[in-house]
Length: 225
Length: 225
DNA sequence: CTGTATCCGTGTTGATACTG
DNA sequence: CAGTATCAACACGGATACAG
Image (cartoon, rainbow over all chains, first blue to last red; front, side):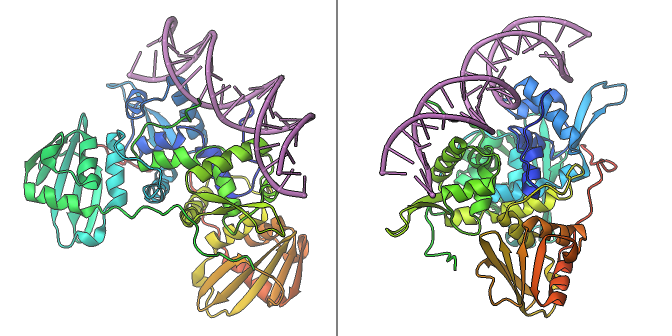
């Protein structure tokens, strides 16, 4: 007889919080954003979550039509979790939330990130105006997971995909890439291997400017007339 | 010695959830979005919150530089809570969250909203392309709170402000306005009083189109090569 | 009147162990 | 691999009492 705790509020934001405001809900969605995953793969990208909580969140997210559970065809008889179209449209939430939060006065860098987080952060933070006439492909290998960034016509597409064949391939620890993109580190100083065009890899690292930190104060007077 | 539960995750979204992911944190920010409020005013806009939880959230939000606590000058010796600049910049979170959530297959309308929620929903949902060359002011009176919408040059500004002097003034129950704007109800059928230009009030109500509901399914194949 | 502190019943969360 | 069961710790909501 567990009536789920809910804001009794007509506000759409309150409804959003009712369905994705529970602990771990959004990180789970994040891990599925670049393609379906199995239960165990989800746990790997969510250090600290326990199996029972993951089970419960998956049920709730399925009930909210954010994801669906599918059984793979016979050869691999396992289950996978996959975002619905509407669930995938929530990526804008992650982008806006990420852009706002990275300016937090209390955010401290250096904590580990999952491969999917790193790729999504690139999708969020890349400055398209800096792409210019770059026309190239960059591959990423983080553990078992592979991704690819395609830059062309001043735009970029970053997605899951085979790294082989890219003009440059970055392999190793995804956290090291964060240190390079946002922390000013050089590839030589971190746990990343660069194969192929090294100049391209260096240029790529300049496409991710960090916005300035927010001052923790309130400006003159918002006025309530 | 209570170390606050936190995702140990470098992802900026995880940091965002660490500071605004707790229950009631975002609704509190919402209530402050249109100007500072006192403790008791906050409770009024947040039915269901208990005093101790509100106190705790206010402390945490202050520690995160989202709001500041100020003591008003002598005459009214009470405290107010006010968003910082960065806190106010979080409105984009509410807008994106609201636009995404109002398409939820499981959202049911009709639940009560606070005056601030209603005003913020207008800021979020108004379709600027429908404003045309309207040049007018509309006032709102919900209980003690007054707001004003100024339409000019194809744009709109909606804020706290005295309703008197507007071309049309809508007074009464804020939930009734929701029914008119998004539910197709007419002013005559709800608990709202229209003073002034009634045709304007009717036209105003057509500026808030609802996006279509999301189907609860997943499209063909996102491909994970 | 405006908050703050404390207690208590309950539900949620999280760690470990275990089963199909 | 994919979860379920159990149990301890914590967070929440409500009530009450208290301080400026």
